[in-house]
Length: 127
Image (cartoon, rainbow, N blue to C red; front, side):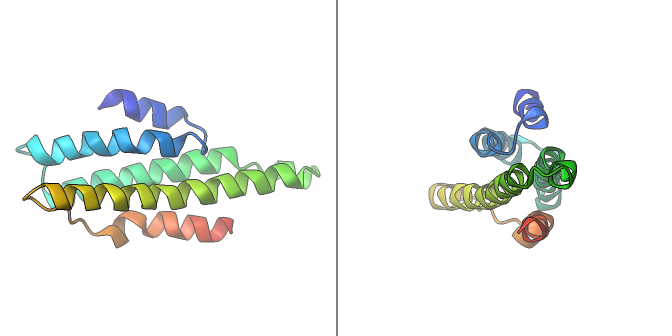
């Protein structure tokens, strides 16, 4: 589980969507095989942590000083990258959930409002 997490920790917002499928596969393995960690609450908390890390990576890229120093276009580009990253995280998650729910008996049904509330608020602020 550590390698995808390390990659996310250092990723630029444009790179994050490519990392999400592997992260979700690892979470799925935990959900499917772990005797301790496979409760809905624990997996939801893990997915929340992924959301929070995505927000942190996007925030780290957005530099308000760029705007104040006159490089407004760079700041707008960074904000647009953050918006796209947040939206793609949700889209990839939804597709992943659909695939699991059509292929397995055990349903992937976590409280998405909890998982994506902070991401959606962040995307709205960036907009």
